[in-house]
Length: 226
Image 1 (cartoon, rainbow, N blue to C red):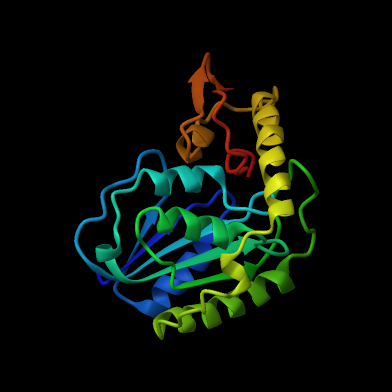
Image 2 (image 1 turned 45 degrees about the vertical axis):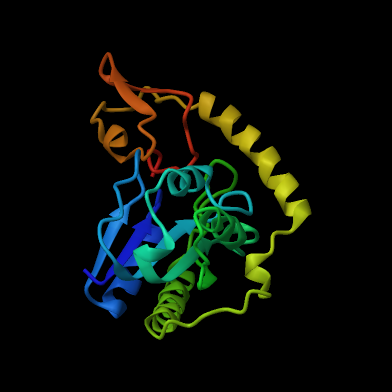
């Protein structure tokens, strides 16, 4: 494989975007960001990260994953990141860029992809998402073409610079997420099928007495609810 795309997804938006990019690039492997990272084996033409925006930044789970990755600037000729968001990715790209820099890697390209917001712990889902999803597909194709051409952003681009006030909000939100995670539970209508256990990227759910039991490592991706 010439191209490697790491994807963190809860509700599916980021996976759809990653598949569109992979289709355009051709000869691409998609790896889901779950639990411990697999070593980056060999040299790739492009390595990318596609993930949702959580509280105006990159999901803490994605940051931890990259931090634990065996990856270096020799792993690829070109590195990119795409953040899916209901509105804007805010500090997301700058956070990923900072983590990669700690490994000696310069992020070549990073951008937002506006799509349907699915954080139903805070707000209701869009009842008519068709137009927004169509627009997201069109954006994904344009972004994929930029990645195919190995478009490189100037280091002064705003995507690479975090807003300090947004950083304060993000740090506060992590505490809120942790509190919400501790309140996760199954309603009596749960059938005990165990699908949520299989979908949880952080391994936070286990079956106990035929129903899901939630731990303290919830990343608020909403995969179990969806």
